[in-house]
Length: 152
Image (cartoon, rainbow, N blue to C red; front, side, top):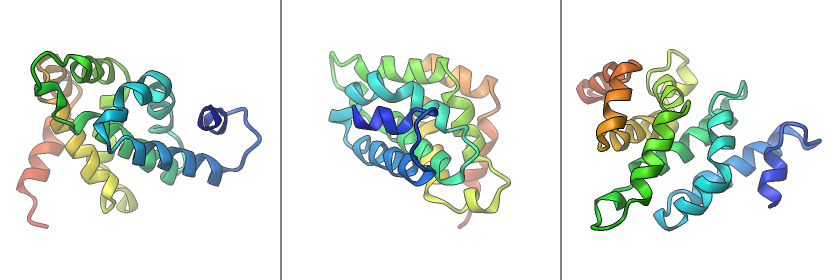
């Protein structure tokens, strides 16, 4: 509940509070067991902050998005939860945010762990047929090819 308050754009908290709230969500999203609750409660906020003007907020939001996309839980028999999360992320602005971070001209963004996580998120989304088509349609194939051919 407190995290939602800290993410509210009308909240009187400072930007550091928002950054840390997003970092908490990114860390919690590293465990697939947390995905259903986090996506249900915070996915819209995370996607909104993945387009935020503050680089650290944007980076932390992309880390969380990448974590939501990169799990392989949807491959377990009978588990459709992650597949629906991938479809939800694909049908929102999530793909655009991941593409922009994966293929950023901004030097700070392009050397960050968030860039790696954005690429991992696109790869994870690509395991879903509908999401794969949406990634290609929105221009996400080029960053993935560049990442695959990068030597560093």
